[in-house]
Image 1: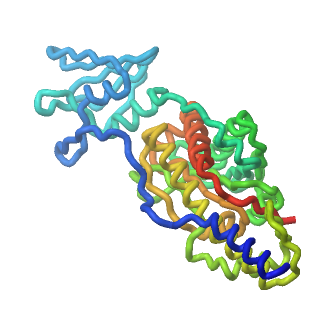
Image 2: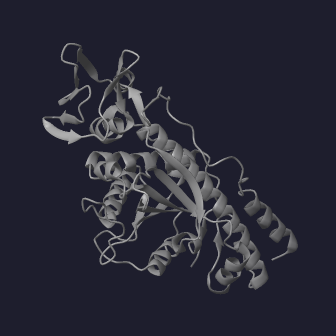
Image 3: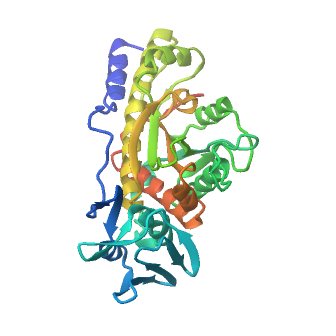
Length: 363
């Protein structure tokens, strides 16, 4: 390869590197007013109902509230911690109250009851043709087999949640004409190195790993996305890759056996891949915030093996905390899991609108 051809190839690769700027936070939905009563956060019930399209009836004499939407009905009483949801009792740590003449409910009432029952308030977004720029995506359902992952207090296993959401996402992608490779399609244990091998042999454009979170702090909740940490040395892994991996760049001529040259190109590819992963992470967080209104913890760098050793843009998604009672309860809901899958798809679609990645495949 002449120096001129190498220079042109290097420029074409460098052009796809995205500036790693901006913060990891994402825009939020309209914020409701909140009130602190005896150290507990409360929300105005009438505002919640307006936002979710729920009918509210309040009897000032009995101090009882009736909420209804579609086939669902919720009954509660001011000062009473018990709430009837479709006839079944549920218990709050703090009761509904009256503040400045209006009915207010603890924030947990929104999370525990309203968000789980009325998820359908968020309309489905129609996926655009931007996805056709992506030919193939690897979907990785974390854990499996004798590795259950996190386990919620009611017994919900991470491996089951991960696989269900992964399958739903795969079906949505296939419906858009995207080829999907899954690292597992059943309750099987797949070693991390095998997941990496499947990905690197797939000639895919993206790698998306689905996980569920857990933390000793039971109150912690939310959605977060990881990309390969900047602390991972791209030069080092580029040399390791160049030793045993072929290199095929679409629309570029490459015929040199120089290890130094291959390592230089892999270094640029890994740097670009991290930038693409960050953009994909941001797009998914924005989409889930918009579609579900769930709490977004942001995007973070990590040294997970499935991110560090894959050769294409890769993200690992934590869809919620099984250690949090309310999120575990919501993740049991099949409709909620479908909405998560749809939100991830929409995020991939948003990312694909600005898709500039040069296809890289090893052989």
